[in-house]
Image (cartoon, rainbow, N blue to C red; front, side):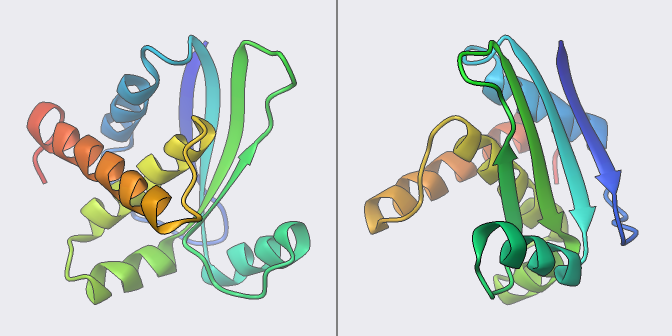
Length: 146
């Protein structure tokens, strides 16, 4: 099973090209994970903040929270990835990037975490950003120009 799905929770995301994003995710996982079922849940700041407080004990806004729900020693990668559409919109404005590019960066970010990449140290953050950019460029060149 190679399944990637996208859901609006408490907000209309307006996200387009979900099938194209799924192609990118499948490409990232192609040589690393045979079976996966990944759910992207687009939500509001308020809802993601409540998840952040309840499960991670953080009291700050964030753009993404990734839950790896895979069973130990399972061949199936099972995950729920929550993304705040409001954070994506604000970050796109702040960094002067198109909404779609910022969304792709966060979508890829969640997958990279599932693959074991961290972003706690400066070196890890630099590597994470490099990988995000690599996959965004792949998307633009091979799947759908922005």
